[in-house]
Length: 107
Image (cartoon, rainbow, N blue to C red; front, side):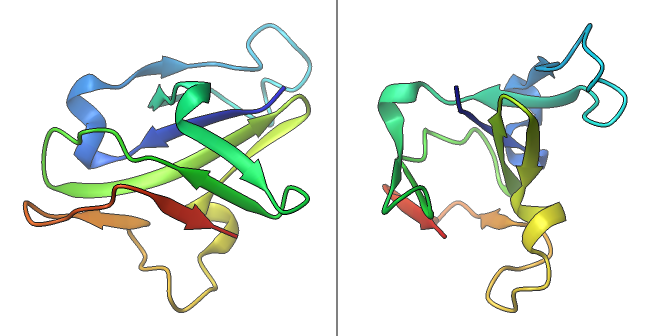
């Protein structure tokens, strides 16, 4: 099973603690984080699982977003796992009042 979360200052006011590996031997490696879980109807893995395509929900305020993808064995985030890609700013996805991202693709 795969889950997708948004985390960061832009969603801090509506985030809750997510602990997908709580109570397992993976909890020390993959600790709890704050974020919002996206509805599975709003995202899909495409092209042999090399792309994540999702619809960005309404974001309550300006700030930064990180995308966290969880599978049964681990999770990774846009910031911690892809920060070396020059096109991705250090804050992940920057949200401003003029930002319109109806659909986002990440590979």
